[in-house]
Length: 418
Image 1: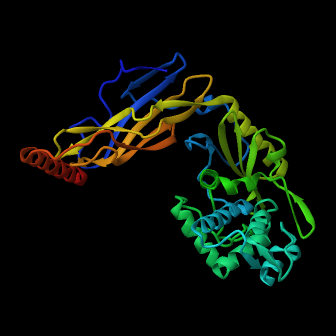
Image 2 (image 1 turned 90 degrees about the vertical axis):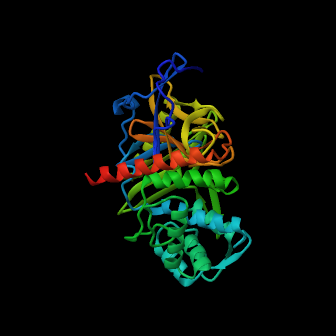
């Protein structure tokens, strides 16, 4: 794809124009299928909703591309709802993390308490792996039961063994969720059974699914297994996508009266992985149809394009007290975005950093991120680093920069009082 900068008026974060604090440089990136990438500072609206070409029925929904995290479609994606059994993804991640940290092993065996058996097992009448009272089950089998059979009893056994009781385990889940950037999710138990504290958004469910896929490939395979037998009872995987969509290999369905029918699903086609999360539907067939339809729409209408190449200069950051006034910023990886195959997606990219950057510093220092918007949605966010080393400037240069920063700071303080 050829590059043209004929409409490029000034670089991102123009040297000498930004003061200490949060600095933002704006760059329009407009994709035209003539093969030319135009860059300018003009403000252009993203693609209109009707141009996206998808009209979903789910009350809350989101479709993302796994590699970049780009959002292809969303609808009420930040609305908190009961996640039902989709919340088992959080329990699974906590267990995966504990295994990776060496705190527990797949071969460890945990006892099935009366509480786990009565509240999550056969007597409860919900989804269960049919764990026998007082039996001991390995962590490996409990994960199979929780993920493939959606066993509430399996989750309770894991929670009690790892934290003493479900409430304490729910606190671990919340702490872990915050560490993963899930800022709004709250939990009251380990399995998604009705509890006022169980709340998640489809955006955070999709974010968690992406993290599990990328971080635990050896455990992610469990989500694609089509059946599991325990206590001589064979149960199929509850994910309808596994048998209806090419490349589908996860993740989890859920249903409670409070939350409705929901699903987090993922599939790979032609080397591209998409993740869908929906919730709030009134019928299990509608759930299956909606998730499949959304994934098929994404694969049919979008493709990955490179916005900025690896180590390409994306913008500039102002330097304080250095032997140069600015430093180029670049990403260590190509910045890629999913764009519509037919049509012209208009994207807005901005470099956001805390500056000016104080010298001296080496090349490769992380100073901020580049965010690419498609309309009102952030399609991708990637760290940016200094492309060059910058040495300490002269005493005069540092004095001039100090006076300039002081003056700008005083001006801003006065403006804020107006």
